[in-house]
Image (cartoon, rainbow, N blue to C red; front, side, top):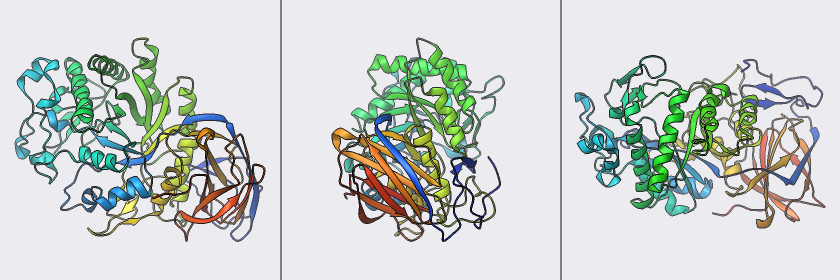
Length: 528
């Protein structure tokens, strides 16, 4: 990652077919402020399909007391749910697997009633969801004594609003009693957290691999049969490469291979339809991530067990890193595997639209939402071929934190520029649509195209990173017939605002994009 930044006042340079990867985004030579840049030519070939799009969304905030944390309360509020599933059109949601349903005692400072029965340790087949303690008590309740896990309730409410929503789950730590300290290397550090609630580090003990597989199988069966919200996929471990002072667990590549194989075997035995995904390591280090995937794919017995390859857009779990080069390198590694690629977590970055001088934001990437979040979505979906994108958090009570919606008090909802950026993709790209071929990004314009000719879907998402109004000329071939496209704009003054329809003449579109703007053109106008 480079630390230098392009200054706002730059001399006019030649239009850029040369891409420069800066602060995790694709940057081009641009015109001076006030000048017209372009015209920029973009070609779209709907006859050449790439990955299927499952949807965009975010992760649930599973910790924190609703009495103290506005976002913990309001993400469950009907207004917050409506923003998520209806207004933004988010079609996917990621939740944590609640290990407390089958946990043993935590340290004395925070006694949590044990939900572990002796026969479960003796025989993994005795681990059944009807014996789990689904109602939270003590420290695990997060201020919601006697209630079902917040993550499960969130999926139920979202499912009511959108029965087709896709739900995916990740494990932050296996139950503490299933873990041990490795003799050396990854997982050697293993302990309860200082507050006694989190199981930090360690590794999954080999003698409990089958127990863990039955636990995950029963969790998935409970979601489907008890709570009527099937999980589409599950990851056996969130960020498996490093110790964290919260729920975490480490794996070597061989351990990951062995556990994936065990989980897949039990899923097959019990008829669990949930797909296994992983390894949820960092896109910044594609070689390390691939070291976990390679043994699984190299083994004929396990190669079909890992259905989805997924990563996180960080360098270390906090520092945002999702450059075009990293995204492309990971895709080059996996493009011949036949597996889908998902981006299951990355930070939100800054919410301001205006560029700031002075390098990168505190958590990495550019210092504004267009150059940071919008470019990272483009890098993942258009360059990295991601089928699914989930941002880390939906709501936040602190400005410029990770969420898309600001809740500064218990009775306010303030969607930020980040919310509208993600809406440009989520609202107008129906799940099941394919990304289609576009010409290489040039002239300060990033372009993504999505089409389903049989369903009459054509959606173009264009980003103008120039400081000047830019004319874009688009030529579309092989797509559904359309005489015009609905248009939505986000710039410094507008938020996914509907503007005049854009005519299509013999597959040709001409568009003037305001400086530093995001435009969606679509045959599927917004519906509430």
